[in-house]
Length: 337
Ligand code: PEP
Ligand code: MN
Image 1: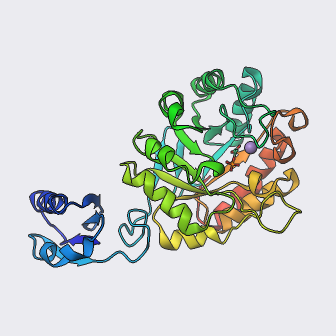
Image 2 (image 1 turned 135 degrees about the horizontal axis):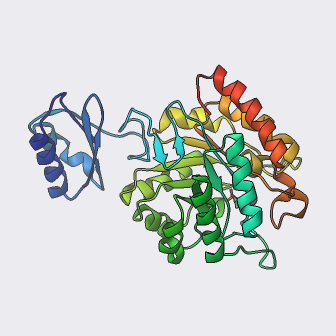
Image 3 (image 1 turned 90 degrees about the horizontal axis):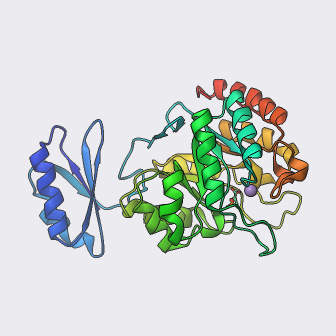
């Protein structure tokens, strides 16, 4: 349930209600809005305590949260969450542009890509150092050496670094180098990993599992939020359907659907969502038209020789063209990129 404080409720009154909620064995999540403060009370049997909280000082009303996810819900926080980390802003008027190779392969490949995407207007660098590969015989990533290359690229270009963490054992290591921790589609329901990144404090890019419903995605986000990390961006990256012409089916209706139900920003990945270089720019533009708060795009100096996902990676020139197209759509949508 949500305890909605009166406009102008004092800090003492808010603190008192937080303590009351905790004394009832519930978790208190205060959300300080510009208009008023609300306190989400999370836990089992929460509705039993509704009346006793309603009579508290400074309380306007206590209302049940209808959605299965609680802290992620717009019922709890009406204002959209904006994530700012270094050069990257996701949400508000800004469409965050995260671009870079699927995998960090070597310093020259990553640095040249970082320079090119920065020059074209990207605001963050992506690149996998730990790669979740379908086959154990495929390139698995450079691991810590890859993280060091990403840090070098950040030092040179100023771009925030977005990179995947695959295991809870690696969270501390990846967080030492990354600005945003990416949870890959295959790990969306790895709950211990979600809790571990929730405890880390760095913003999280949470990818939708290829067979996950949007409620499941939001409940996965809830694990991160509940662990105390409010900076979660959801990522639509396509789902598995009967359609075989594209690698996945990019479900763009999820962008406005999620915006109606959650305050968390929504990023779209048209690279994995289509699996075809030729389709990426147009679906990137469509994502912005649907209201996306950010895009994550695979770019490689020579896609033909890429160690992973070359068939969906853009050349530098193709990324420049994508930016030109996306800027036109962003302008029509009153967004900045
Ligand atoms: C990636 O971003 O390179 C990746 C592996 O994505 P996903 O987890 O969406 O498959
Ligand atoms: Mn990839």
